[in-house]
Image (cartoon, rainbow, N blue to C red; front, side):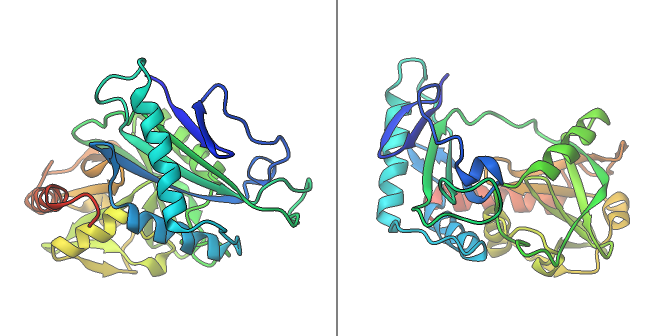
Length: 284
């Protein structure tokens, strides 16, 4: 299976697509991105993803010169090229990633007065196991960061945290924020049962406003709270992760301790409601 990348107006195999060595996305991680699953050749919830891409870019004061139609066309070109590749089977295109960087710049934080770089990659989506063990980590999310809530390409702390979780036999790392409130995973949002109610950290904790998180909250009753802690997650009877590629994924264990219900009734209800939403249309 192979990934195709649209950059500089054309889609190419990943091994042939290039950006400049001094692109600000390379040198300082100055960029934003979106990842969406692809179903039947169509990026799921693309309207919402493009809206969040613009919100993240605004947070970074990164002006996007492209219309949504331009971005959709680039996505279609990348998906079409990947789908036509003989190396990919009928289910080969399962994911798309849209990345915008600050463009070529100096070897520091200042930007140059140049257009941003647009990169769209399309390729296999991969699969997730039916449930996931998670591990809480000692590092924190900064809810007061200049880029809190933005989906940026500065993912080094996620890489470190996820590697730590993997060493401990977990598939995802879970952060609290600087005041000890439960926040999010490295690439996921967290839902959990508290006193019989389905709850999730509020955006005030600094967590990303996930697209799947948003959709789940539209189809089942969820309480947003900014006072949840890692101990709430460790003591819950059931919990799940959401992301654009995981959908609704039950949590099996927290820090090595199995949850009582995997999946529990709240998790099953959310998963079934989300599946119905997907079946009703690909751009909810």
